[in-house]
Image (cartoon, rainbow, N blue to C red; front, top):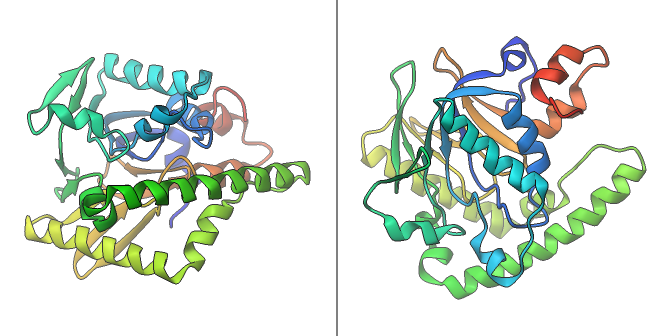
Length: 276
């Protein structure tokens, strides 16, 4: 993963930003970091690539705080200021799919099943959440719910793990992400998912694909198709951005926070207006 900390990041102006798997409505959503990121940047176009709101969790128990409100308000404010916003629902906010395949625009946000993004360099990318290529979610929703509960348990452990790290003066680390990468079956499932999504982009004649769903932020070439996953705001806290020259990069906001130099007050104010 490329972590950016340079003049282009300091400008905090992008042609396009891609976000997914925010999971608003859950205790482990890092809405605080996302709010800071949204407040410190501008973009011409914003893609919300699914699972922005976690309907699964909200059905079981209600959790919503001021940071969650801030994220929603900032997105709406961006739309009012002229940012084009495209929302592609995922499996956790699948209730929004009731209005698909017909496109719908509400409060300046365009809802659609998939999208085609053309970069400033002329490359074409298929944009989708990706759960339709996850066989468990697609064919066995009950098993998917069980998996979701196990993932929630891992995140609870992760929360306490990082509480201890903070008290020891150590930076944030995702224990749940590390555990997932140690399980051979999970790694194989990620590989199968990436291959299936890239094959779909190839079938449609695209140069690449941009997706979310599996909480694994990466940019990689798969036999001539550029596969890009923008990660999540539970573990990775990553965003995929297109710069004005058409180049694509991943931003890891937890790494950016750790790497801020002591004299970077201007950069901090641009990225984190609420304070670092």
